Image (cartoon, rainbow, N blue to C red; front, side):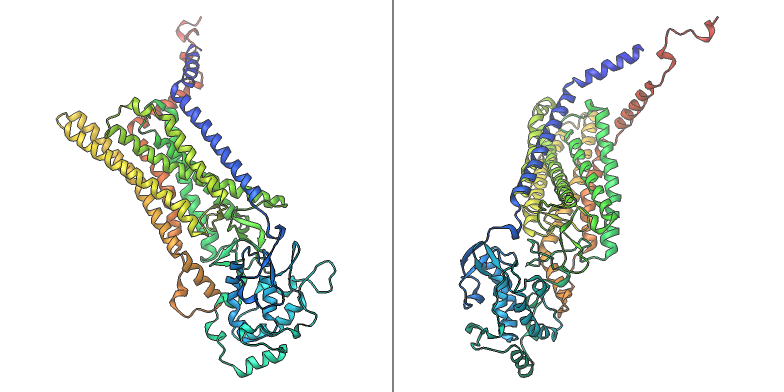
Length: 605
């Protein structure tokens, strides 16, 4: 009983010690910053999202949509039917139809397209084209496209437009579309009967430019299998309204839905075990880990959280391609399956409770991964900085440790600012392999600015501090070479620092190289996929596709840093610390020395 009382006193004393107080304060600060980041994300999600169909339309003169300057009306409503918010964006997509317009398949084609891309302005509403106008144009232009194995664009399907006699839905279109004339800027300025135009186009000019110069975006703004069911801010290969299905593209179904999640789970679990061992070693022997080596513990803790989040995402991915946290149930592909698509922009709120849950999960998982990834990188900088202060500037251990609060402020607040910026700019998107939401999966700019550049900056700063501090340690070892004991201890320290630095720097550098590869090749991947989907491949450029192994290596390098954190704590001292810990656990069981007043066998009467 006395020994147990002593142990309780020791525990209470430890709780009041400065080391535990330090971690208590830092943990509270971490939670505070994290909550602020989540609240900021929630606010930006609530405030920043207004569906295009609910936006107040603006009525402005037609200036930049040059194809529509000669139509009967002079003002258009924005956002348009396709969701474009500027005339420049509308003209960029409308230009893909120039060859089809000049082909003369229909006298009403220009008017129909302008009703979609520069709709007639009527107060606060945009008037879509009437269904009969669309069917009139499709009846002759669709067969013309079919001659070149091109389908009628899914986003221009006539069934989505209202009927002219529907009193509930207003639409734009003449009573008799055959009376429309082709604008003079396209070389014809006369009334053309629909059937006559189609016949002359097919009989008199069998070598139309459409056959040789058409691109997948010229007759169809988006491949049929990637066209979203409603206006959406997502884009693919620079084509708005395109969305990647939750099942993913590029890789085989086995690679996307089985191999990648399984690979992530295996190495994420290994990372969890190693980082948990590192953090647990610190918890049972806190007095052993002082600055400058203590940042290794916080770095390991960050990778512990990252690995746990990846395990959650991979398990959800294995459960089903549409159960992934990266899936957007609010937007589906325009086909009979209504397959959800991958988030390609920051998810918004929804009236659907299931969608709200998935949207919130997407944002929270992004915050966890991005926040702790950046925090781990900053702890690397702090680690090398404290090594630099101790070795190059000859700071003592107490002097280095005196700045512990400043270290925590920088390590936990800077990542929170980075997360808030990403949320405010609405650049959270889904990863089709891991099933998580991150940033830069579909935006090269976001990947470069919010992921690559910070990681490169933090790694470079750490290497600079490390190089200076390491050279100072080598010089000190040369000075104490006359004392074999000190030289041997310092040599072991230099070796441990070199090993740990290599285990951190090499995977981080490989990760940066893979990000460079991804940023440099992403545009060619998307363009090649669009060409392949339309059967318009005529060169080796269509073979461009991402390497599945490169993405697996990217995940592996991320987890490898956490796994290698164990190298610092693997020593004889760690073995003794765990031995003492398990020995102290045995005190929970009653033993003979716990009851000194009990008589022994020899004295029993």
